[in-house]
Image (cartoon, rainbow over all chains, first blue to last red; front, side, top):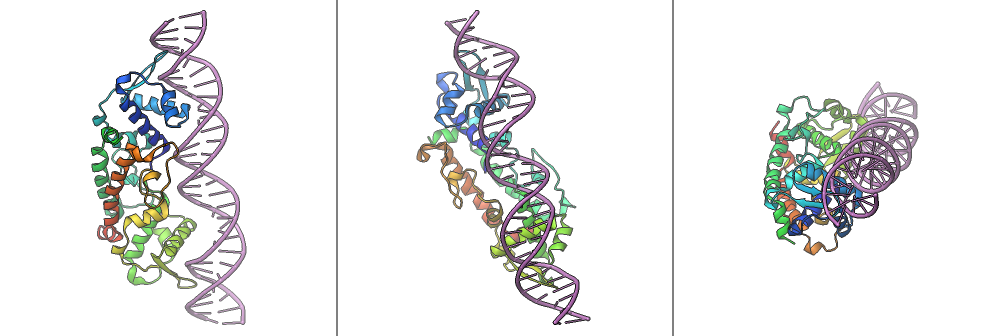
Length: 138
Length: 138
DNA sequence: CATAAAACCTACAAATTATATAGAGTAAAT
DNA sequence: ATTTACTCTATATAATTTGTAGGTTTTATG
């Protein structure tokens, strides 16, 4: 399951996507529309900004806005940013690899091999689906 | 990511699958081979037994053994049993459905719709891959 | 029948992670 | 100068995961 953080990120991105032409949008506006704690959302939007998805403007009339095309934001990138690995095992993660402690020989671990296949299939979907797909469905 | 519980379950099932002809296998044997806490593994094997995957024998000479064919044990069933939902959102889960608190209208939520597609694709893989696939790779 | 072996069961403890909050700092508009 | 709103770091709280304790039941065997 996605963490709330990631789920909120998707809601926020979707909201910003829908209001692309309205300039900077307040954190408060998003947090109210989606019943998300203002402060919590603040952190999330900041992360999205640092990662290059959002721009922001301080002070009166400020807020956040999308700086990438929705179709250039695959679900996989948002999930990885906020939730970490997409793979089901650390020993199979492309971006967050770690060897399994309890595994003596990863090279001959059948679970490892199967989970690589699962990862590849999962990535196919999550890299193909983008924010644009979410927007098109609303 | 899978919890350790689920990962251990897969290791245990694989071990039991490989030793199908040897009768009942001790918890200790599995926990030692895979560096898993004995007591923790005890709980896991018990769950797998209650769910109908394993049989057991008490007392001296006792232990656990597979009572299902490896090809009849899809990854999805083990993951659901020990980790819960496979879907990325509660509002999209087939087995553990819950509405999203922050969502006013699920019917017109684009995230919901996209996640249904992701779920269906994910399930295709996890229902197709079975314990047999893990065993074949060792 | 006594003993030891090993699964069964319930409850709890410790550790980790996720969620949320606090409060001061910085930039911009008016 | 004042207000507004994002920025940053640190901390608090809650939930979940992981692991442990200790006793009970069943079975094999001498």
